[in-house]
Amino acid sequence: MEEKVLEIVNQIRKNNNLDGLSNLNKTDNLRDDLGFTSFDLAELTVKIEDVYNIDIFEDGLVNTVGEIFQKLS
Amino acid sequence: MLFLVDQNKSYTYNNLLDDVNKETFYYPYFRTYNIYSFFKNFIIALTRNLPIVLIDEDIKSSQLSIDETLINQTKEISSASFESIYSLIDNVFNSNSDIIIYTSGTTGQPKKVVHKLSSLARSVRNGDRYNNQVWGFAYNPTHMAGTQVFLQAFRNKNTLINIFKLSRKDIYDAIKNYQITHISATSTYYRLLLPFENKFPSITRVTFGGEKSDVKLHQTIASIFPNAKINNIYASTEAGTIFASKGEYFYIPNNIKEKVKIKDDEILLHKSLLGKTDNIKVDEDFYHTGDLIEWLDEEKYLFKFNGRKNELINVGGYKVNPSEVEDALSTIPQIKQSVVYGKSNSVLGTILCADIVLINPIPENEIRMELNKMLQNYKIPRRFKFVEKLELTRTGKAKRL
Image (cartoon, rainbow over all chains, first blue to last red; front, side, top):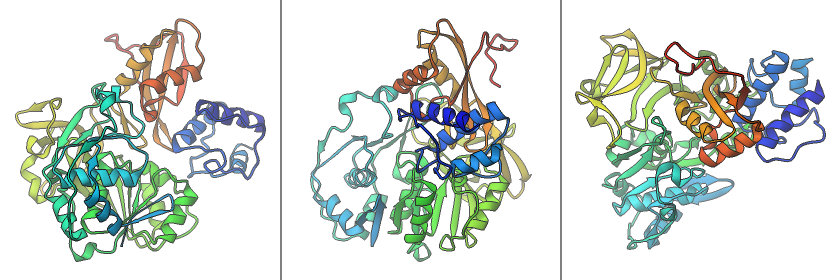
């Protein structure tokens, strides 16, 4: 699951002309460390929902990669 | 007194006064990422009664049908000699400049609306009770909502703190460090502040604008800002600010009652409320806004918004016309046909999606790169689905889901 999330994150980064990441840390902040805007976060929710059928932001925003893993586990 | 703080740089009202007085040129068509330069140039144009075109920092001139050579070209002006910031402010609010604002493109191409300061400042309030407010500036300064916040703050010599496009942590730091008292922003912006973690007591007023807002979001924002009164604003590029809400319900203010009609649940505005434009269709002197309402109490002029009549998609407070995006997609040779639509999303309210029928293969990121050359970022779909054929309606039109 963590690899799949990394793949999705990298797809979004690539679309923004950012370099791909080799790994994700649980403490990575989606906005500060991954550089995501609200449009990117929206794309992330949709891409994750397509795979896992879970809206990770349903109860308000999550801030870190670790929180996403938690929602999906 | 501080005028503006942007990325840790501070500008006082005296700095502004000096700069406005001494400048011997301005930019009629100014495209910049620097918000102080933007406001300074705007004020200079207004004080000299010269026309000013408000241009997004990321828009291409071809999208606005403006000759690229005009952008950031200077024009000579005479210096000024305002003695105090108060005489500067008074002068600005008596300006006769044409202020040109572009809509986000309801007819495929952004359309130009020419305003005077009097229509932009229609809802600006001033007086002692508006002194000492500190505004979190959370809009694009070139858009109608941004000019409204700027004018309200500037009229009362308030401080503006630029918090547009900041991260959640930086927004909260700015609220705390500068003791921000007022924020006006879209629902999408407020959603970025969630979930509730700490209370910020300095905020006394929170204004939602640009989108239909949701009750759950209001409740959480109310707990983050326990001392804040919350209201909604209805404004448009064509008309400026028209209505404000009390709680969930909007009311039609007394002074414009004669100029607002409701027909088949749609809001119609009298042409005297609008800026000048060649492209707005007016029917017996009234403009059809496309915004639909539901009455709570017709005699008290109380109502709530119920979505839109036309097909504009509201993506995080930005209005996108799907036809414009489809037209851009159709210029990519590998694409045979496409349909662009909105899908409900917990972050942006609605996310822009495209279903595409290909003639020849092309990867998603190349499509995005092509669109990036033609469209502003918020108009680029964030979800692409490649399909064999599009679902069509009975009239043969591609169906938006």
